[in-house]
Length: 89
Image 1 (cartoon, rainbow, N blue to C red):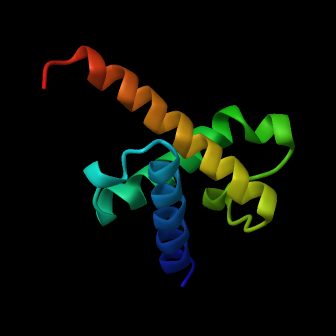
Image 2 (cartoon, rainbow, N blue to C red):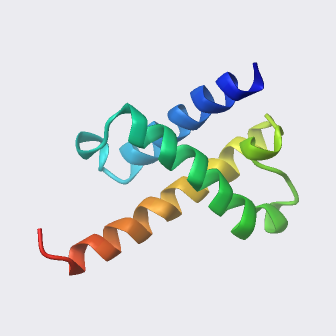
Image 3 (cartoon, rainbow, N blue to C red):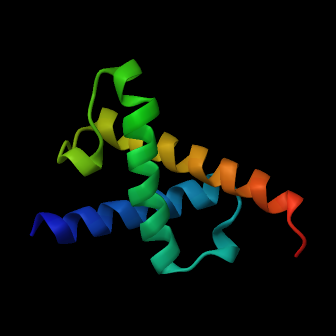
């Protein structure tokens, strides 16, 4: 059951991050889930020690962990957007 909640929350976080970064039209549901989950990993590595909390990947469903996961997803999308601008389309 945790896996399903993890996927749903990851999808919502990825969707929210894509709206903040204005990439929502380019992404589908699957990519939103991937961005949310991978973004939570990035947030766990970079931001969780600063805030002293976990992420959704660590089964910590607090407000602080959701914010850290969202910020990690935004960082991930920012890096992907920077790399894509240099590549030909």
